[in-house]
Image (cartoon, rainbow, N blue to C red; front, side):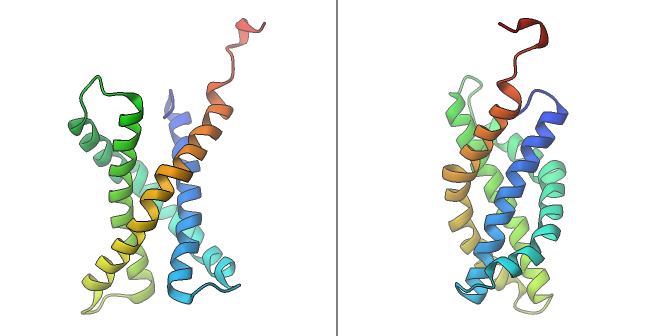
Length: 158
């Protein structure tokens, strides 16, 4: 979403911010349980995860996911269908990559890496897909339209 690179960067940054925030809390709850330490531990993991997520989204996953989505979609597909397919492709790719990042950060490289990564991916996908489709995606689009798309051009004030 966005009409130019600045708007696309803002949209991506807001989307990543919310997804990483919620997914950090979710992963801390998975590993530590539901305790008061969720927020402190999620805060420690948040900034490195946000940096990695932004780089992955902008340079790798976003490009691959959009390319795949537009191969799956008809050119005249309904805008809602486009949003759903692109969002799903993004979540599949980002959850895969960010699950690997989290698995490496919290368990290192050992003989159980592949199984830990796949388990983490499955658990993250269960949370990330509905979170994106039902909460973060609509919230980000709402905020974005309020920030950018609702502004009238300078000469058209009524």
